[in-house]
Image (cartoon, rainbow, N blue to C red):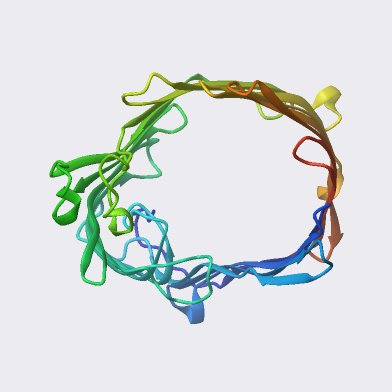
Length: 410
C-alpha cells in the first residue's frame, strides 16, 4: 500500500534482479528446469516511474513407464507493472499485470488502476481490466473486472499509531453476464509492535441466477478478523476468527440447490510466541474449524522450540510438531532441525522428519520419514549456490531427491 507522506524525489535508478536455474529429479523420473526473474527498477530515465517484473520460464520433463519422455512448458508471468506512486503526488497509477492489493480484491488483474488523493489521508480510485491467469504467458483474461474504492490512511513516522481503511465495490462479468458483484472491506489498525488489528470482509450482492434458488439479496461471503498483542518484548499473543460461505458464479449457476454446498464454515485459532530470534524461542498454536449443520469439527495444533545461537556457535537447534484431528482422519508431522551459520553467508542444515495419517473409518495408517541435508554457498561476484539432498521412505514417498539452485543478485 502507498503511504501518503510528504513528497520526496526519486532521482536514482535502483535495480534488483534475481535469476537462477534449478534442477529436480526423483524416483518418478521427473526433471524440472526453470529460470526465475524478480526485477524492480525505479527512477526510470530520471522520472518517478517504476517497473516491476516477476516471471518464471521453465520446462518439466516427465519420463513414462514405456521409456517415452514428455516435455511440458511451465511459464508464468506473475507481475509486469509500470507504476507511478511517488509519495505526496495527487494522482498515482499502475498499468500492466497487477498483483492484487486491497483495492482490487482478487489475485491478479490485467489492466489499469489509479487513485486520486485529495488530502494527506484520503483518496478515491478505481480499476478496470480482465482477470488474468498467472499460469500462462498470454494475456487472455477470464472476463471483465472493474471497481471503485475509497481509501483512508493515517500513518506517519512521528507516531507508532496507524489506521487504514479501504472500501471498494467490485464487479466481475463474462459475456455480458454477472459472475460476481460484491463489496470489499479491508482495514488495519495498530501501534507499532505493541498491538495490531486486521479485518477483511466481502459482502456479495445476489441478483439474477444467483437468486434463483431462494438466496438472500445480500450474503456475507468472507469475514476475517485477526488481532495480536505483545505485553513485553519477547511475548506475543494472537487470535484469528474467520468464516466463509460459498457463493454461486457462472461456473456453477446450474448446480441444483441440493448439490450446492453453501454451508457456513467457521474457524478460530489462538497462538502464543515466547523468546527472541537469537536465543530460546517457542511457538504454540491451536485452532478449530467446523461446518454449519454438521457435528464434525476439525482440530489443528502445532508447537515448536528453537534456540538460535546454541553455545554462541551460530548454531540453530530445534524441533517442531503439528497435528490434526477430525471425525474421519487424524495425523501428525514432527521434525528436528540443526543449522550452522558460517561467515560470509554460508550455512549448512540437517533436517529429520516423520509423518503419519490415519483414516479412522478404515483403521489404516500411512507413515513417511525423510532425511534432508541442505546448504548455501556464496560463490563471490554476487553468485550463490543452494543445494539440497533428501532421502525419503514410507508408504507415500520412496527414493531420493536432489535440488540445485544457482543464483545471481544484481
